[in-house]
Amino acid sequence: MTLSKQVAVIGAGPAGLMAAEVLAERGAAVTVYDAMPSVARKFLMAGRGGLNLTHSEELSAFLSRYREAAAWLEPAIRAFPPQRLRDWCEALGEPTFIGSSGRVFPTAMKASPLLRAWLRRLATQGVRFELRHRWTGWDEAGRLTFETPAGPRAITADATVLALGGASWPRLGSDGGWASLLAAKGVAIAPLRPANCGFTVAWSDTFRGRFEGQPLKGIALSFADRSVRGEAIVTRDGIEGGAVYALSAELREAIALEGAAILDVALRPDLATADLVKRLSAPRGKQSFSNVLRKALQLSPVAIGLLQEAAKAQGLSLSSLLPDRLAALINAVPIKLTGTAGLARAISSAGGIARDELDADFMLKRLPGVFAAGEMLDWEAPTGGYLLQASFATGVAAGKGVLKWRAGGMAGNV
Image (cartoon, rainbow, N blue to C red; front, side, top):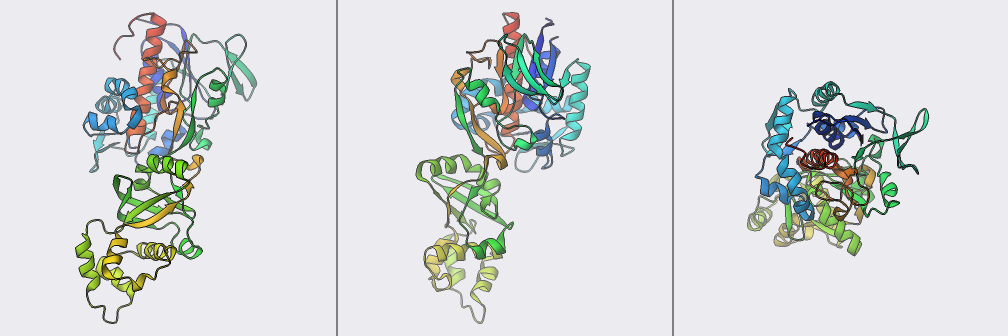
């Protein structure tokens, strides 16, 4: 089956490029539009950390990471699961491997070789790119409108895939400006909020000045009924890092409801309370209190500083605490989070096009022929490969949806 109709894909990130590939493979004339001067800027930035493409865990566990959106995203991810994504990379000449944490990375450990190979393949499929084209909606004739360096431009397309990303890291192209354009058409948009983000803390000047930028390693963070092992980093205005991001959805919602949230930090999660008490009860000799914490418990200076910060907040003298109470504090240091860090610095965003606005093929019910994919949609996921996997998978699903809609029947297998 071939398709010669013109399809516009707006957004040159993973979701948009994947939709373009699915369409071009079936003969569609595809043009990808993007506001930036080059494609996939956020994808390339993700590659600086090794490009965590997906995760190797069993699929039912994988799907659970999408929380409330799991049932909605499941058909798309089952149709294009992690192994299919790995096979796709392999076909582009970029093999992948599974890291010790189960995360999947390209062997090259960066995004640029994969993106170059992908763009070469898209070029051979006839996909065209129009960059520096900022989408501004539709005109009275239903044409897509863009602002370009040469002035306003209107485009006629038989179908459109919107893949403009969320609203994090706007300097890389995803600024959420599309939300007002769709809302004007009656499309329900869940507010865009930070996800996988840091949080603000009212550190004392002393703690901030000494420990800003310092990592807390080998810790466990707990909130409500969840506990996460990993690392965190003290920032000038709060705390961030992988373990924090894993709890960010729950913390964000708690702060929205209550105005603050208490995050508990276990500084030595591998030591039982009894073991901590025993070590703290040993004779100190001439050692200073800080040296006892450093030598007997292997606490880093920033960990000791965090303990002192928590004790001062409670009006306590850390060195005067009895071993059992100090042990309890060491593995449950309370940090009061007062707000979320800015959306512009979040790894991803929550919110977007409400799931009820889309049909099973990712077409907007209010706008026939207009499909949406990727982080524009109202879902969120933790880091670990889940973000990119869903972006790729929904891009495939939207591309297949266009094919099905234009053909008036089955789109075939991709």
